[in-house]
Image (cartoon, helix red, strand yellow):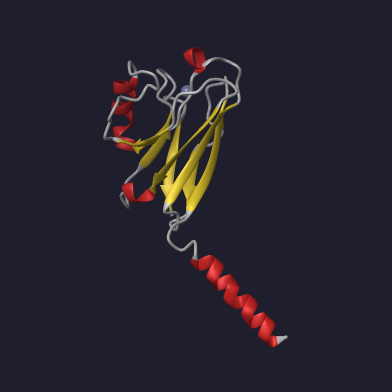
Length: 148
Ligand code: ZN
């Protein structure tokens, strides 16, 4: 009996060791035709090497009228990212915008999209925010993004 338990313990160690290289943490967030994210803050563990954010549009309106995306940047860069993205197509994010840490595409009602990014791009002690860059939305569609 003791031998069996030891073997089980060793195989558990082996299984967890296989994932030691990285940990992807999943975050679900949704927004509807009311122009609100269902979260005001997203917090992921310090052990997350990657984060996969899934955005669900729970409304019915098309992207042209009530599009939502999920964009991550330094809080201090938010206003610039939003204004430079106003005229950008198709996602309201300026192509090659280095201030953007990660972003999903712009989606309409009933659609779901996701983005995966590495937390290595985030600086310790920096303030980050997530927001929607559809013109006019970021005044209410925003929140804090925290690691650890
Ligand atoms: Zn929006």
